[in-house]
Length: 468
Image 1 (tube, rainbow, N blue to C red):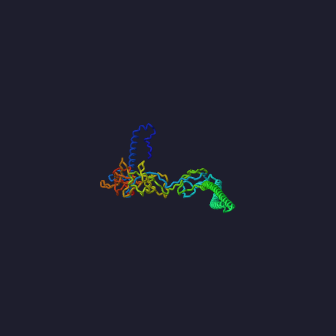
Image 2: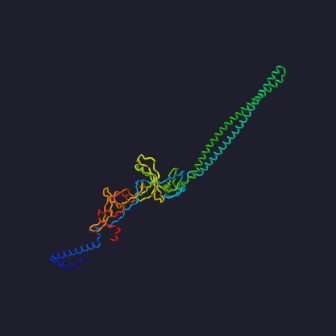
Image 3: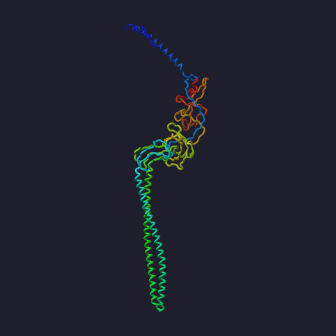
């Protein structure tokens, strides 16, 4: 508002102004009173145009809230645990030969099938050393063949000497018979010669025959001795040849084994995936020298994951294979997956007096990770019950409360009010609590704006906003 200049107030001289100061004060007082009245009227008028709805008795305005009807649904009797997921199979890849990396064919996070090449190596052993080993094997094989031939020759000689000995032994038997017959003839002739029945010449002939038979027998005995000595020598040579064969066989086996190792090393110049799965961290690079046993990466088979759950012994009576287990994200509280118990240890851990239990979870969408920290809820049983949203619960001290909407008649007029009720809650399932007692199905639960509500405060359901 613009105030017009008053020539009476703003005179030409200060002296005139001072003389009329009383009139000025009166005029200003009237002006300010007028402005105050106009401003108050404007404020009252504006407030009246946007005045919120009040309760029937003209009390405080009704709070705008959202309602949710309490209904019976499926609730779970469960116990929550925490743990870390483990891949069903995790394989560390280690080269079987020493060599320098010439190619890395995959990247971490890739899914690979069994037999997929992961790393190519240039082995330290060259093809020339393998060829030298093969040549050594061939040489040892030739030496062995010569030793075997010598054994066979010795065996043939032994067979020959044995036959000679048998022949000489038979000849000696015959020679003994000849000597005995010659002795008999000689003694008869000697008796006849003494009696003068035969001539002296006949006796001399018999003596010569006997001496000849004895000499032939001695010759046969000498031949037998020579054959037996030759047999012993052949047998000794045979034993030496057999020992040499065994030695050469051993040397050949060692050479063959060394050659097989070197040939196999050449075939191990590739590290391949032993199972299908996801490639883990690959810390090595092309040009790195790796030795036997060095870990170059890992393959994680995480289409299914296991969770180790230490269940207290006081719950052992409820444990059984096949019980449902829900995985919960510890940050958002949402369910990640649902699996079941597939293993229950037969003994109790002496340290924490718990029973090791394992649950397996499918991971078809690959959202779960090996080593991921999760909450797990073993669901002992399911049944009908009531759930209360967590946003509807307030706490005073150790007591939980909720507000429900009730219709109240006051001064002959009906209105909705918030009624505070104590409740007893069970475990939390997702974003809801299990209700043990306090309210009944069919009641209208207030699920918004509870921080500003008091018992008996008037409310206005959000669904009625458009009609009010």
